Each structure stands twice: as C-alpha cells, then as structure tokens.
Image 1 (cartoon, rainbow, N blue to C red):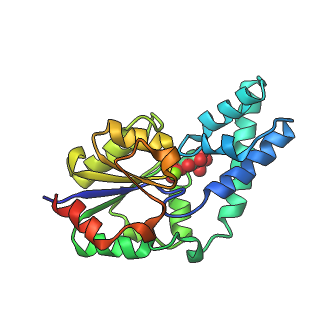
Image 2: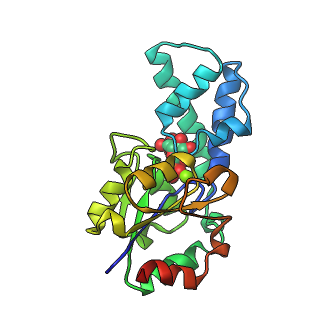
Image 3: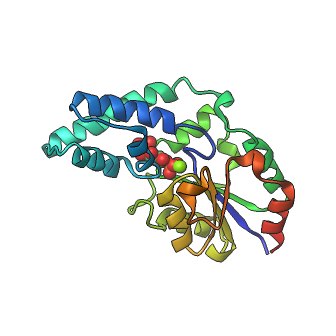
Length: 217
Ligand code: B16
Ligand code: MG
C-alpha cells in the first residue's frame, strides 16, 4: 500500500538550527544567561515558547508575561533576518534527489515541523511545491514530543500512521514519531538519536534500495 513520508524541516531539509542558535544566544546574552551548543541541542524540535522557558530556567530567571512576549518577538525578528538571506543553496545534500525519488514512486510526501516559519523557509528554498501537505507550528496545539503534528500530517495524506515514515533530527521529534506508531528515521548522530528505528548521518547515506524497501515493506 501507499506510504507517507513525513519530513521535519529544521535540521532535515535545511540547517536552520544554526540560525535558531545565533538568535537564541543573542537573546540569552542580553539576559546575562550562558547558552552553549549542548543546550541548543535540547531546543531542537522544541517550540518557541518551550525554548524560551528552558533558557530562562537554565539562567534561573523569571520575567513578566509581557516581557516574555517581547523576547519571543525579538528572537523571531532576529531569526527572520537570517531566513531572509536563505536560498536554494541551503537545501541539505540529496534532499531534492530523495524527494524526487519518492514522488516518482507515487508515495505521499508531507512536512511536519514545529516551526511557525516553515512556509516562509520552504518558499525561500523553493521547495514548497514538493510537499502535498504542510503541517507546522501554526497547525498544532501540542508540541513535539507530542505526536500531534505527525498524526495530522498522516490524516491529511490519508495514510494510516503505521504506513508513515518520519525523518527527524531531534530527540523530541523521534519520540513524537515513535509515539505516533510511525517508522522513525533519525538524521544525525546515533549517540543522540538512539531511540530511532534507523539513524543516518545525512541523506547521502540513504540509498534508493533502502527507500524502496520502506515503500514495499
Ligand atoms: P519557530 P522543526 C523547530 O523546527 C526547531 O527545530 C526548533 O529549534 C524551533 O524552536 C521550533 O521549530 C520553532 O520554530 O520559532 O520558527 O516557530 O525542527 O520541527 O522543523
Ligand atoms: Mg528538526
């Protein structure tokens, strides 16, 4: 039967994690909070609200609701100034090849991202039309590791969750895919993404044979 391939955005299609890091670090600095790349790892796949909550707790800071909203807007403005400069060169290796392969095989293709900027980013790198459906941070009420984003994507593709395959670079996203009863494929380090059904360093390591197996099994 037809399979649904669901792609995370940040860290899978494009490396926007580096821009999130720069924007959060600037914000943390303005609050006198130290912020390391290791901590940034814990923000991957995590919503904007949850990310700021974590940073504040690492720095033992509490702020008013107004200030919280102001900081979120500030971070997003900084982040968007990086996004604005993006082009097709920022698409990660072999992504177009894999998308075309899956499309040729007449399988479902969806985006499942926590980001509220997903559509803007896809337009920037000219990949919006590659996805049958896009589910992002504007469409969900529960953030990853909750499976909501992937379950909505499966529903919109009209494919049962058991027949869906998720590509994810974050611990929270792999958890979400597993909870949704989908096949989880981690993109990154096995030491970080060990809970995934399969882990590959990047898409250059994913063969057409492997994709064909996912489609036929
Ligand atoms: P925004 P993904 C996630 O995207 C990022 O990994 C995470 O770092 C970010 O905080 C979150 O989107 C929200 O993004 O501030 O743009 O709404 O990996 O799920 O595609
Ligand atoms: Mg991601």
